[in-house]
Image 1 (cartoon, rainbow, N blue to C red):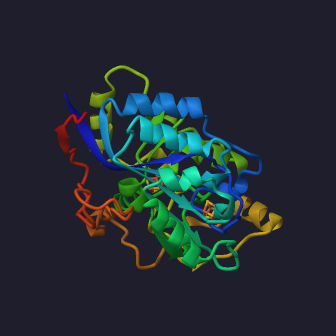
Image 2: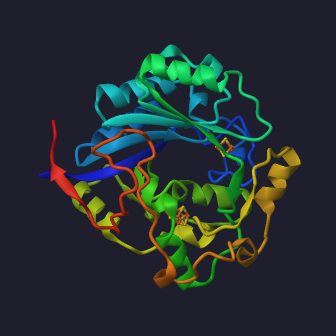
Length: 312
Ligand code: SF4
Ligand code: SF4
């Protein structure tokens, strides 16, 4: 049996965050209380998934990964059980000054997003020096712009939904494992919970496939080969949203954003394509610094599965 080859899989260890960015694409500011992925469930999920999938890069993303009290154990498991060829993290950097040494020792790459108005307690030079000392590739990214993405309004144009899905960066680069399911993007697994906070009933369990049911490899292949949008795409602008400045919200701003009923038409980027025919599928970015054979900027596979022999 060959394994399915996947460039990147994301793990969301915490739904919540210690920042409150307007238009956070994970809606993390909406999660007021601590909300963690259980270590045991993660291990069970990844053990089963990696029986059939060969993952180039496992990305810990947010919420804020460093908020999970067992974050080091997540990294240790990923390394010890070889869940992927490389392990990386996307962080806002706020807790990096007190990150345990093991975080640096276990990570192959770290992307630090710097938000306007948020002061980090470690300088860029210190971050780079820590990275060099521990063999962790560090990228520091100025996150001065966001795009509108999650919306309460329902997109009622199937052609537009197909176009958004086809051009969605997340649907190509951010496949996610969460609580027993594999999802084709990093938004769908939370969509019913997010809309529920706005008082909107929504159910999209079938957007992800069950990891612990029979014939996982075959079902995963069929799932990845299916070019249909997810149900969650009815409430998401993907990469088609208008840009806005990055700002930190106060409590009332979070509530206002949660309840916002702006029409999706007003939040679309006017230049974004409106039909699948006009829309180009994003490249697989390979931005997580793992180098060859995970090459940079290769064309997206356009939903064709690439297989390779099982490696021990
Ligand atoms: S740092 Fe900002 S964008 Fe990232 S998860 Fe936290 S609130 Fe969202
Ligand atoms: S819900 Fe659809 S449009 Fe939004 S990130 Fe997922 S795949 Fe992309």
